[in-house]
Amino acid sequence: MVAPTPADVHIAPLVLETTLPSEFTHEFDRHQFVRQCPLLRRYSNSILPHTWDLMNPYPDDGDEIWPEPMRDLLLRFGLVVGVVCIFNLPDTRRYIVRIEGDRPPILQNELNELNMITMELFEQYNTLLRAEMNSVDVLSVRELEVVRWTAQGKTSVEIGQILALSDHTINAYMMTAMKKLDCVNRTQLVAKAIRLKLIQ
Image 1: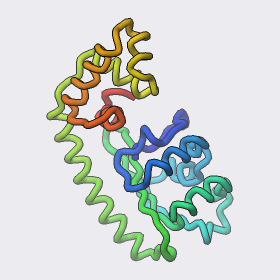
Image 2: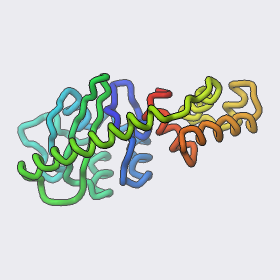
Image 3: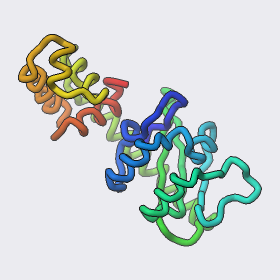
Image 4: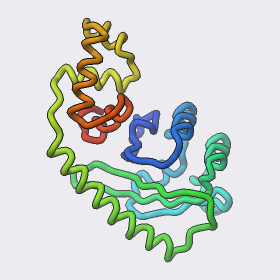
């Protein structure tokens, strides 16, 4: 995921790849946990990998306080133990890779190995992303407008009213944008446009 900033309220637009069910992200965002998450606060300025464990929080660390509803959500989805790896790119973009599940606490040698594997995976991901950005067709100004409004949660009818166009025209722009970015639906289109920094 893209590392959240203090202005971010929802995590869904920041997630680039995940194996978590959409219900998790939906509930996380419904409660606006991105602003309460001790992981995101704790590691906002760090570049070191860190582990966390809901069953054994760090007793000497006052920052590791999990809001009870967030803790319940994590436990419900079996996210008891995890590793957070942080990556800074030269252009100031910052990414977080989280690996989590239900298992015994992570040992130091496992953390070291996971960090090395994650660094390699992230480097491969970044290489693919750069290649993807170079090969992407440029969206027209109107297509970008439609994608931006879609990212704000507007429907085709609402976007049509805003831009003084019919919803059929809006859908045509949407389909063209999806084709250019090789996406199958609006959600993927918005996520990819954010990932490619076409919209914010």
